[in-house]
Length: 532
Image 1 (tube, rainbow, N blue to C red):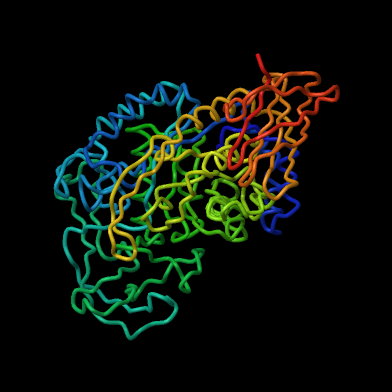
Image 2: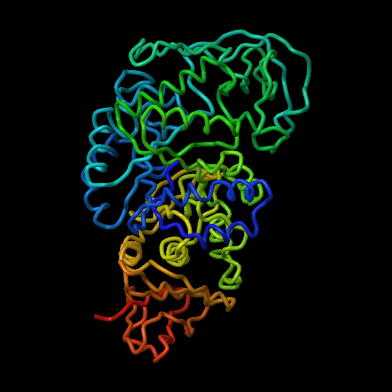
């Protein structure tokens, strides 16, 4: 298990134990020495970027754009990239990648109406990954193992209908149904893998062409829903398409083979795991252990378990033995709520109930992603004015492994229909200027002891006192309401400081004890660093 590139300290790890559920506390007590021993020897503030959003143009040029942009990203301070699903989806060259059809087709075979994927060809993907890695930027592949879609033909089998809103309640007896579960991959044949998928490799579907108007989740008669999944709807094993049976030995063998094949042919450094709340909680631990044994190196893994319940997330971390990090969905939700509160959010509570606060070693912190952006499934956007504040929190604090969203860096413009059926035109602002500023501050100043000043409902701040390798201190101050000032300690007596963001002009001077009164404008963030 690779701990994300961040400085781990005994103090931070021990603090997490104070509020940990019993299971996680027991595990951390036993595993903490090994976790700390695996930290990087040198101080290094890593930053991940999700290098895509849902509405990228389907022009097949994403991989070539990445190859051109990789050097600028590395220079800006991006140390890892989470790339979109690179394999062929059911919509061919238009598929974002989550309607996965063929894991082994990375834009190499004529299937689903195209050779390339939405993002480009296999060769372009490999070249982009190689370019990023040559610059010291890690690459994490997006893994969609929950389901398959776009089958090549229908099959008949016996299944039991269950209520989609209560998967513990059958809606009738077992019967013969017909559904799309046969995968032959005619464009690929047996290249890279000889396995053909049949109905018995799945445990449930949601369509029966013999009775297409009967709405149900159809569970194969001789199967059970997976255990250790989210309990929404009674059992949230089934999400969409043909749901993989994670107890079938041929399925397990094929997913293991695919992981090894990807490491051999593309050479990624880790994985982002999609929809893990729908997959048996033990699966990815075994899968990752096998890949690390095969590769003889650590692989970073972050899972998408999208819930705002901290107890559920802590259970998953403990069940996985700390081998997986998780996205900090509760922190995103706090940002969303704060941005919609018109300046009346109590900023003292912005970290409450989050992985960042309670379990920072396992938190991948984020402001936005492709699912939360406007018009998507988990739509809960953080308003544009608040994003600089939110990014300051994830980039300049000691806790968590921060992830920047592509659309927040480059901006985005698209049209789509909302849940109400109406079409909307969306413009997302580029925050590249302030993000580059915060990335610079993260690389140069965000080190050492952290003193918090979360003592006002609008204006909060913290300082970083630096280390021997990075001796320059920093003071961050932000407000969701009126501007103002706050006395904070930076450990640098009689020194001049300036606002790196330029939001507040002039300089401030610290006193003989290394304290200063730092300022920020209303609805803004300022980062004070030693003046040259």
